[in-house]
Image 1 (spheres, rainbow, N blue to C red):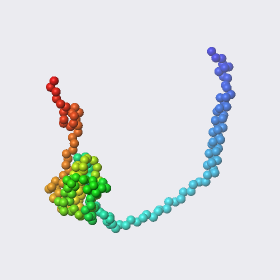
Image 2: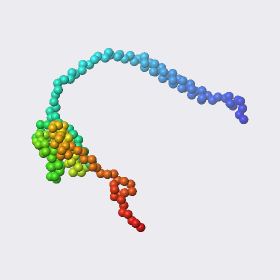
Image 3: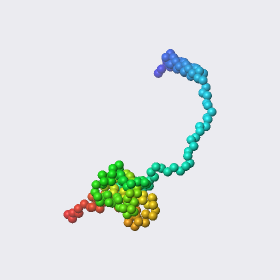
Image 4: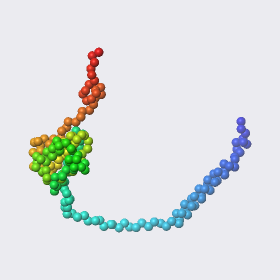
Length: 192
């Protein structure tokens, strides 16, 4: 059992450590106080209102106004712009129509709404299309051109609707089911 003399005995190193800490704290507080005293107070200037630019209220027409529409078929999505004051140029993803769609039947699918409405040389057409195959992309472009034509002239709606170019063909690939090989194809049945 320890004696009273040994428990009351204190080591001098423990006393020195708190004294050093207190001295360090006093030095830092005096430095902070000295730095605050030497800094000049910040002068806040009154906010002056900046003059706003006056916008012209005139209705300025853009250089080449266009009609915008989106066409879809299967997985293909086509964004179509019919640019007014055109000569009949068609660009698909930055390439000409003949370069992108080399099959003549696909070119005819795309040009069919323009041929029916007799607007082949009235507009320049720029198309961005993605997804699906070439046939689905061609039909998506046809759908987009038909929608944009109805935006440009509502009188064309009845002719395009009668032919069926304004209807979104909703037939898409059916999802695969578990237990089957494809959407509906079942594995071969074995009786034994």
